[in-house]
Length: 104
Image (cartoon, rainbow, N blue to C red; front, side, top):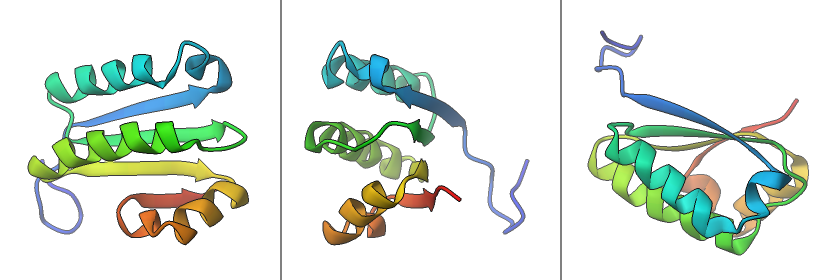
């Protein structure tokens, strides 16, 4: 299969995060993301519509996952970021690292 740009479709995983997902700590999420990548995902879509903010530890886990995905030709998409998250990503320059889709 190919995408509309003519390149091969990347194996994709979608992860919807909520505040309760992060209650056990971000390390648990890191293991979950690494598991998805080890299972073959090279594009990981992180739906943050249920989160009120994005912490530095969460960003560190996303950067680590992004690094592994980039080696496979993929990356991380942050979907439904609220205005506060989008501002943080922009101020830190991470909007140039991740594909960021702002909530409508």
